[in-house]
Image (cartoon, rainbow, N blue to C red; front, top):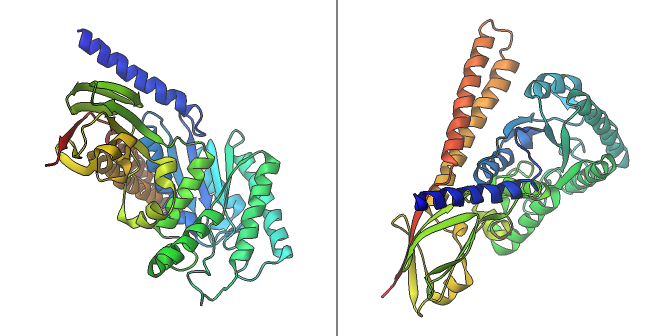
Length: 409
């Protein structure tokens, strides 16, 4: 009975600690987030990464996400309608409490920077923002500086130098955000920095950051997601555990519960999952500070006899490390682990859920809304979406793992 009570108390402490940390995070319980933008948002990559991060890092926080990007859109609208129609049809039904807006790639006209073009963009962007505030009066707005046009890894691109215009529009979004009291995240500079880094470190792969110079690949989108999450004050800590092998004591267990420590084995329950490793965005993981800034799952074991030790989790070998390295601490999020595999499942389920949402919005409501069976189709897709959310949440729930260190002969 005493053991059960201690276990329950330990779980309450975990939940309380993460709940306190969640108070510093921009998103709140029950938020409904609309990602408004052009074809870069329509790719549904940075939006999916943000959703997956929130699910895995704040598994108790219930937030809904609605990507609403339209290819070719500008501050005044595009082929799916002017901004009044876009907001009425695509945004208002989501009942958003949070809206992010990224526009600018198309607004510059794919030519050199022109003050008059910037002035037209700003005039319409102010109109759009005012309409957003009318559509959702209580909503919090985050403006996003557009990702860059890549003429560094694509030196022969048709629109050489166009990022000068895109970057100025992104900069102006930051000025508007400050003036209006909104939050702001710049996507232009960090993605450009990644491109320039990879050009120096791995030239053949630099074109993968923005394969067509306009639309970022997965690594570019991960950098964008990171910029937004940092602007929102997301915690970079998954868990932080330090064990003193010499005394057999747990020194630190931040956002984690460690039980059954016996020799070099123990049971550990983190209160979050790491963001999953994935070869699609390996360039960003390798050439940016994503792991250090947003994905720290630290394990330190001090007091070990000199030698090389093999860490296994749930019987799966994770890495070999010297006693000195283990004493300094390793970031488990950088390795293939059962926790990372679980998080990868959350990412996959999130992709499925996002596809359902897109099908309901674009394929049924927009393309076939006049069909008599459209309401039934939308109701069925809404039910599927609810089931998908339940699966996401179940998959994102951390579970107890068994850790073991063994001396490698």
